[in-house]
Image 1 (cartoon, rainbow, N blue to C red):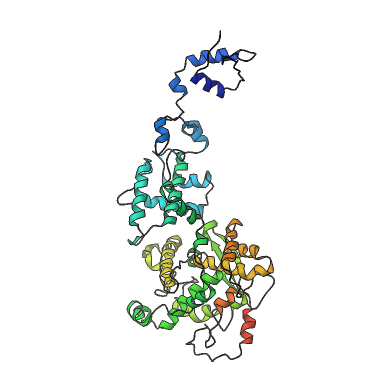
Image 2 (cartoon, rainbow, N blue to C red):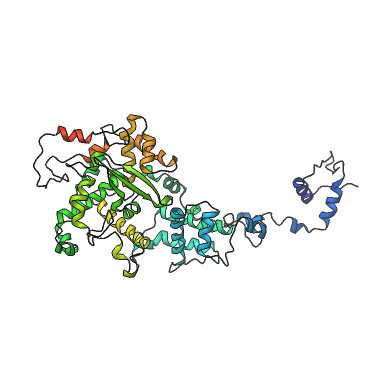
Length: 487
């Protein structure tokens, strides 16, 4: 007895494990054991609709969001599969469940990526118009939320509306994907990036190359700019004025915050906020700084600073900051390396309730927002394209340019910036090629001293005019072979 192939049996036999053949008349002949007859007898007992339930119909293919969990079979909806891969039940999951899944099953960094993405998920649940309920997954509500913040912006922690750019949208979409993966919906619910301009998304992935790295001369101006004018000082800094802090000293203090960002390349603003005085180690002719990287699990790296930016007496240096500038702005008991000059305490200290000030993480969280806001506002007064993280990009670019002739620039920049993955350093090779103007050392040009100057390089210093430039240039070119040096 022969069985003529039809649409359904052809599909089943194609997927079968045993080899089957068809003759010239397109009729089944079967294998030597004739097991195909038993197979077909079993298939007769199963409704075709059930067998083909995992295929998408035309309406599903054309549907914007693709498959639906309630009507389409998928292995991820099998309870055994869910248990094996730790998928969560959206009806009962908590934020802590999502966080743990991201760490254990998605391999995300607990202190860096997960914390940032969880903050975005938390914001989504608190939106006043389109709040998301993660116990009831709804991609349409998510799209309404994203459309709204794209057009209208979003409230920050202080109640101010801040615009949400392409990077903010992509970061939130990454948080959405992390949530979808925790419940096994990533193949069934869409991502918002499909609505964004593909060219803009591509540019965002290459965002560092799109940023205009300032020239050394612009950085030099940033380190000399008078940020607080007399009117602003009298109006907004009356409290520190009453304590004896002069406007000139306040401007120097602000300049030093930029100095550390551009020349040390700390990841602003968190690495700066958590840095303590005990992390700055005096080694005689230079300083070493122990930097903590919250982004990669609070790992630490030690940088031995060049003598030029450690202890030079003729321009900005760590020694001049610690001995001449910081004592005028910081509370005597404060242990933070960088402080809010208005309060003399660690950035964010004044924004936390008094009973919570011993909670270091809360102070740091507030401090990062506070310092970022100040630095962005001050930096744009000199360089409109400025944003705090640009200082780290400039540092990596400048050091790649300055160390390139020595042949080991890539490895030294990777160590200096604390990159765990060499791919993160590759961008600075491209920036080097893009911005190198072949006019000499970037670090020396940005650090060059105004010749009428004193301990900080300010023209208004009371120190005498230096007529012999040779010793100064010798200091600027100081080199030590065992560790990266400014040239």
